[in-house]
Image (cartoon, rainbow, N blue to C red; front, side, top):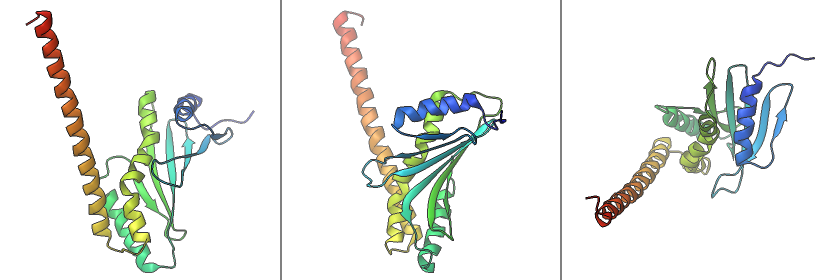
Length: 193
């Protein structure tokens, strides 16, 4: 029997999380590698996932359907600057640009040595690359499309993301306020106040 160089327990947690999100996935039992595609809302192409499970860790590599033309040196230079700008201060994970192949990917490493990650944390790590591609794919597309200003592309992506967060917070605050007033009205009607 071949020795497995991955945690079967981690494989099962990851398998459960993947099964919630996609219908079809493959698992290489010998090497501990999951492969599957996941749809990104509002995007025509899917992201390709490769999750390599180790004994106490796993690495998620997500490849974008966007491909850069490596013969266009000006564009490749702008993409490299864009990747540097968006990776700066990124808390978890990072974008990679393969300069010889034009492949854009997001990589996320999860150290699980001596801990058992909760299922929700594993699920978050699987969904994180999608959030990052949603946030930055327009910037990649702009540069690939011929607009080579990496600084402006990064600022536009981050500004759009901040506006989205603020709008989400406003909605949540409005819902919380409604709940608070609703609870207060209930208490008054029930005679609790």
